[in-house]
Length: 126
Image (cartoon, rainbow, N blue to C red; front, side, top):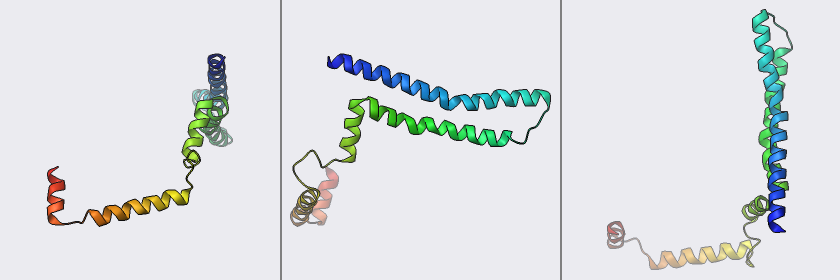
């Protein structure tokens, strides 16, 4: 059952990404074809520059939509994003406990590892 759901999620992701890709790149493709026609007929139209600017902005929808599609359709991607976004929620320690233990470890290392020339030369040799 888990394998079927994973395959279904993968298929949904591929279909959604493909549709968004097609929809976001069609306007720029139309612009390119239209530019070839205008160049061949030596015609200029004032609104073509505005259309080009809009078509290029629509392409950006693809870049924004892909992570959203992955987040919605792929459980593993959603878990990965949550793990990166909220790294301290998995442990029982709070952020302040982690910071305190980090400070404690640093002070211990500083007190035991003095920066002397003999310590530095032995570190360099290793």
